[in-house]
Length: 314
Image (cartoon, rainbow, N blue to C red; front, side):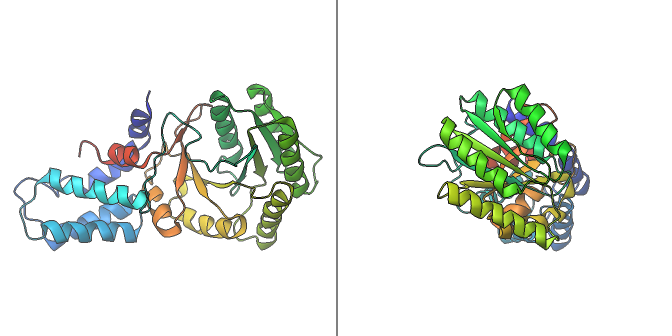
């Protein structure tokens, strides 16, 4: 199954919410009045894309078609174009489905260091394994660093994944300073000629200031071993949390300088519109999306394809 078909399948619940709310609004020959625009606005918000994005779309529709008879295709074309513009953040995101490295800022010399963070239970460790598998499939040598030293189970889980994938892993005893694990991971990656080092961190609530400060320390220690690192700081968000993910993104970005999002569990949620809200309000792009439970169910996020999958066949 190609990425477009995967997205269509993953977004079916989000699309159903949208269709339920707006299926009778836009019919050929119907006049687009304020009442219909307000109903459409509510439908967009129900997908968790946020008030701002929904408002911009509705304003654009009112500007172009307000008081006129509706041509459904014209309506959906405007909606698609506006959402693609938002998701690209005003730039030209040329990420490719076929190139798992295309969303990443690569180091000028090996290794590229990726710091991964997130709250408890979002699928962080599994997302790391999926990303490592994707990079290995592209021919890259990957080193993992098990920086969640608070939970023995987390280290065991990542170790299990490293054995399955056949990649090297750095671990230390429970209670070890996570920054020390991150430092050694960078050191091991540099000395072994690895292309990519992926550093796991303990799950933490964004409201725990001491743990967020620790995340900042890890970030600084990495930079001491490899100037310019981490080259990517990826925040794993659970798509099912919807708008609640925004407060997570804000706090984690402050502590770890987040450069991108891995949106896990996009399949099975009716809140797929949160992708748009995160991009618009945080300025942080979604770089990868989790579209299932298998090891290869992590895909490069392609904005145009996401929008076409969400609004196709309306």
